[in-house]
Image 1: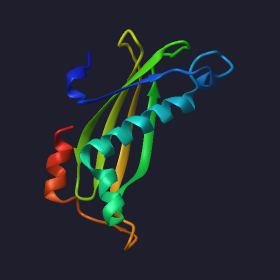
Image 2: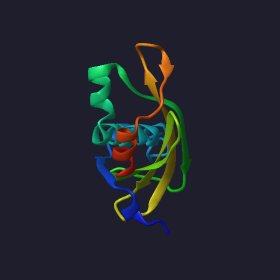
Image 3: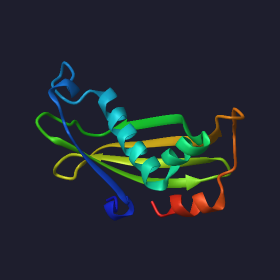
Image 4: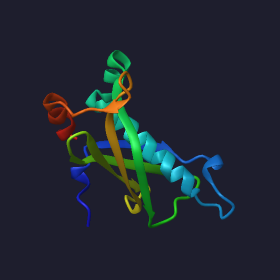
Length: 137
């Protein structure tokens, strides 16, 4: 059983009719959109998005992976739990759990991002102060 308390960030999203596929459950692509929402919440919470606005340096997604476990249906809500998985020199990983309203795991996702300097068009080492902030999540 996963310890949901390890996931410091949580986001609840209402499932819309437009999220469904021909089988009347949430389309696989929508799960990736839910992960994107969790990722953006992580970037906002850690200051990565505001850092980009002021320095033109910030996170760039390089990989996203999702394992589907259970269907989500309309009407309903998806709960996205997000946490830092690891930090390396210039890259970091983020984990997501996508739950239904009964807190059953419907999907597990992983993202990999690099810290990228858009001024120089290259990655850069994650500063210690940013590592400390990211580690809180």
